[in-house]
Amino acid sequence: MKRTLDISYEHYDAIADLVDVDRALVAEAEEATKTANAPYSHFHVGAAVRLKSGRTLHASNFESEVYPAGLCAERSLLFFVEANYGDDPVEALAIASVPSERECYPCGQCRQVIVDVERRQQSPIRVIMSGAGSATVVDSAEKLLPFTFKL
Image (cartoon, rainbow, N blue to C red; front, side, top):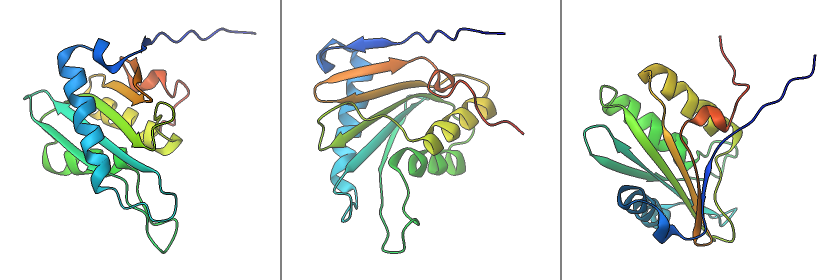
């Protein structure tokens, strides 16, 4: 039986068109790219979260000489948040990169981890993928990975 999957999302041609709190989160993700350690790919990624309490946190990617031991910005950040602020749900996650020739989308592992966090906290995470002056936003990570792994 053939089925159809429709995914809704928001697209902003300019970061300035985002609501204030999302624009501020993108700015924090952009700032986080400055701390990235990417000597091999030269692709600096920053991620920032806004927690329900209003607290914002950020992290960046880290590449290791013993590939594949590095870690993406999104997973670095979410693992830290889960370990240190697990009782404060993540409301939104913004991602940015340098260079920024296009919007920065999370890899498959990151998509699964974002979904895992949504499931654990029992609430969706708004994901803001920015770059090249524009942004695409989904209201839940499940829209990025509709066929998720589940035990």
